[in-house]
Every structure is written in structure tokens, then in C-alpha cells.
Length: 471
Image (cartoon, rainbow, N blue to C red):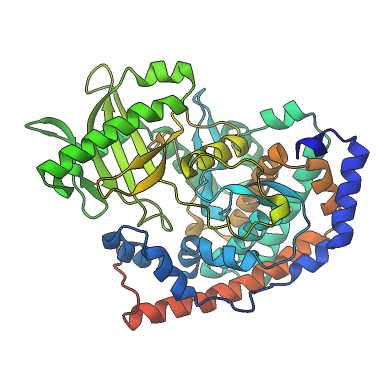
């Protein structure tokens, strides 16, 4: 990549033309599946072996809700399919799981609300098409769940991918620093969309943003803690939130607490020096295991309560396990990173910093040996720092199209920060060959997702997989 950046713009464009000749955009419409495609249920059984056993049924229960919920939790299944399809050969830093629900709002260090990608568990260097295909498929699948007709779903996907294409063209003409500084500021987005939104849509947007602006350590503190004889402690809400005091006996608890304190001391080294000074103003108070998301439900995730000046100065950190990206073994050799991160937590953090316009000031990583003597990688960030997401299941066709376009612009911006933006824009061209191809691909993958979802439900019905719903 570094050598490619030293080429003249015309040379970058030639790379894009060569990629377009090698794999015409129209040919990306075909859904190519592995000849020996694994049983989708077997993939869940394989993943469960490394997950928290008592939380595996909770994950399955959340995935039962709808085909879209299943799709969200089945990143490994789609990675398996993407890995055998032809690609253009142009690489970027991938989100790795760029579906509709992995975009949202959060607070910048300057306390501005930004819209961006907000999940990077699967981030890795790889083919740019993989992110676009996952986003496009999520639109078709969510549209079906919401009762959209085929023409309505087509418009959602077409306009989203067109926006990705057009934004890519814009970024190809921009200076490197201007690309890096580009961001989707929510106040500006609101102003732009205000005349396009009905009053009911405007109210929903306002409610989402109001909730995000009120989300932070103080609100998390009020919701997640109680006053006890021992002081402020995280309150139990099993199995979603289980304080360490309820999870382990005294000896095991002390050992785990000691391990977490040691991890926090080491984690601070992954922070810039000025943020270490800020972090050092806080002391450990309590911790709990917490269930998060859909696909990540049964991974190891902790919340840690820290205290600054007093109990009115809380900081909640999320400590989340970072397993290898589901795409790791699928990325073509020519697009793999030459230097690998020291651990999977660092992979997540570096990928997030590379793709996001602004990142959490406490974003960092560490490797830890647990009380079971297993070494695992984790990344850390603030819990609920002005974070918010759209209710995809409540969107109508017009709302989903507008939201999809915002996601398309955001994904193009993220890709432009790390990839050859001129070559990519040249590959896409200004025609509808690629957007039309993604409409076909998304519908075909939605069909496949429904077949896999039915197999998943059947496995639960027969007892092959356990599921606990309503959590």
C-alpha cells in the first residue's frame, strides 16, 4: 500500500481500470458459495466451544427473533461465503461486519455527536467489496423483516450503493488531510435532512439523539449501581449483568480482581501519555460480567466501575474479549497486512482508529491470563459514551433508504482513509453497474440467509442448539 501511494494520480487510476477489467463490476452480482459449504448450525457449534457456556443459549435466543437478528449474529457464516467469491484486488481496512445496526452516533472527544461505524470486532485489511456486500445484504434482509416489497428493497440497496460510489468519487478528488478530517457531524446532518423528514420521523430522530446526548458515565452509574453496606456497587441483573461478588467465591473473586487491576495497569500503557494522566485520576471500585449485542453475547465482556474525585465522578469501562476476526483466514494473500498486530485487542483498536473520524479517548488494549490459565486478548473503551443507534426494525422504506445513504457515505469515507481511493473510484466509475449488481447480490444473499435461519430454528426445535429467549 505504501508504494502505491507514491504513484501519480493517473497511475492510481490505471490500477482501478485494471481491476475493473479483471473483474467487471456487473459480475459481482453473482452469489458464489463454497462448493463444500459448511452446515450453518455446525458453525455455531464450533463457535460455542470458545464462548461462555451459560451465555451461548442467550445468544441463540437473540438470533431467533428474526432473519435480520440471525444475520447480525452470523458474521462467520457470511465470511465463509465471501471468502470464495472473486474480488477486484483493491484493499482497504474493513469494518468486517458492516451491517445497518453497526452504524450509529457517539460522542467525539470534543463532545460533538458524530455518525460513524461503531463496531470493529471483525476489522481487518481485506477486499473493500466485502463490507459493501454485507451492508447491501443487511438492507435487503431488514427490508424483508419490515414488510417492504421487492421494489422498495431494490431502491434501498440501489440508493445506498450509489451513495457509496458517489462519495468514493468525491474522496478521490480530495487532499489526504481533507479525507482524514471528513466527518458526519449530527448537527449538520439534522439540518440537511430536516426538510426531507416527516414530522413523525423528525420526532424519532430527535428522541434517538436526545437519548444519545444523555448517555454517558453518569447515566450508566445511575442505572447500573446501588448503594450497599460496602459502598457503591454494580447491581445484579442476571444473566445480563452479574457482579463479580455473585459470580465467584471469595478466593476466586480476589484472584480475578487482582488480575483485572493488573490488566488496567498494563492497559494504560496503550493510551497516549496525556490520557494516562487522566486515567490515573481514577481508582477501581467494582466489576461485573455483562452481556452485549447479538453476535458478541457469549464472549467474555466485563464492565469496570472506576471512581475519580468521589462517587459523583464515575467512569465505566467496557472490557471486551477480542477473538481473531472471522475474516482472517478468508482474506486473499495479496491483501493481507505485512505486519500483524501484537494481539487481537490491538487489531480492533488500530482498525477503529483508522476507520473512525474520532475515537473514544480511553480506547486501548491488553492481553490477560485468566483464572482458568487461558490467555485472551481484550480491548477497552468507555461504556455508553453518548452512544445511540437507529431502530432498524421500525424504519419505513423512505427512512431506511435515507439511513442507508448515510451509511454508504460513512463506509466510503472509512475506506478512503486506508485504501487507494483513486483506484477504487475508477473501478466503480459513474455508472450503475456496481449498484445494480449489489441489488441482485443482496436479494440472493437474503434468500440464502432465510434458508440458514430456518436451519437454525430447526436445530433449536430439535434440541441440537439451546436457546433462551426474552433476554
